[in-house]
Image (cartoon, rainbow, N blue to C red; front, side):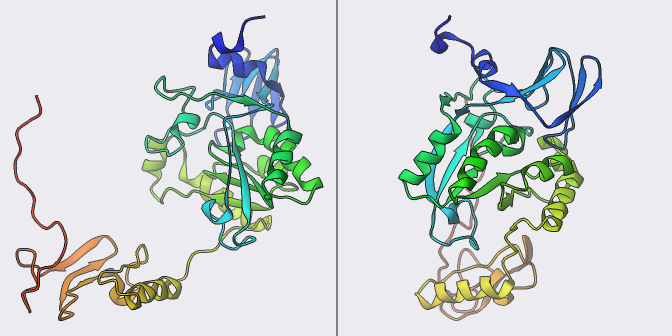
Length: 316
């Protein structure tokens, strides 16, 4: 048997699989995978878009028995702010993704089978191993994250099922590109579900490899199925946070992403005379009265980077 360290990663991962459950047969040798919103039609010998779910002999094989990353973090880092505040959460992730976001902070694990510059080394454990580790570190929550958990749902559910027997809360941190079938499949074992909504521009979603409508449909479904979906932060909470910053002595504190709803906290005022310097509506500049980096009313220099350095020579 070849040494695993000498094997191509894809071949190694193919050795750590089991028959999947989230698919249906279309015709002899052809099947539809519905672990994510792509609903890949996968013919014999081919992989899905995620590159980790594949058809061999007319059956769908899926990841099993490995992790790429395991860590214990405060649950707020997931982020869940309304779930056992301050509790340690055991995070685990596998490899692969159904998107290809160039800015992914977990790029080395999510894109490892697409990008030769992404390098990750799986570790091989059982579901019982990860639950034992969670208990060792006092975790109350165990969450599938780092890569896209929907495409490894069968393996994640096996882990969360063991955790549930011992009172651990299960979570998914996901891009939200789901299907009704996969949401029903994970529902008995996933209590907390975080969707990384990447905006409301379908063209941008398609550039990342997804479709906005799929994500919005999944968010509606999560709500209907009564998953715990952390609500929007209200404007009054952001304003109060900004006030606390000012009370602590900070001169320039902002409350973002709610245009027209946070009062003066989306504008820039002179910290000396309170003259309105830059008026904003969200990310749009409505007016700018700055004069050479100074307040036009009292002449106070305003800290910041206000002038372009101008043209520079082209790099060699």
